[in-house]
Image (cartoon, rainbow, N blue to C red):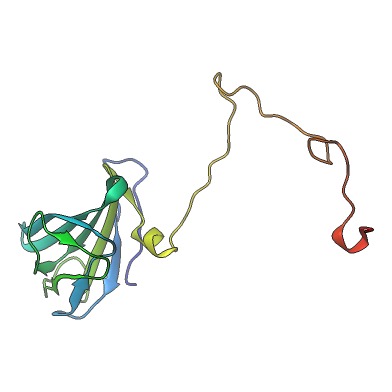
Length: 152
């Protein structure tokens, strides 16, 4: 990986909305999951392939010379094109791989079971009220013995 996902703090600010993978020009690029090609063609000075997946997910691949067409169904791992040798985005040839859910950018490495997951605290709101506080033994109030000393 040349560069990881680095979303901006606000949607309108600069950031890196995908992952750059080191790939040789001319290498086959494969779909990360089954879906339907939403776009395959030129965009500015490079070509892009977008695959629409169930659940509102969409993956993007660039710069990729498409071997698929809009509306075509693709399977997981199916070749969708070849990497173009287009300078500018990376210091060396790379595949910029993106993932979106609707309009929100996500870390594409999450599709592989990697990536950064951010858990947020549950803050009290008028809808959910204050957080419940339980005694040290949990809801029942009974303290459990450590596993090693627990009697049978």
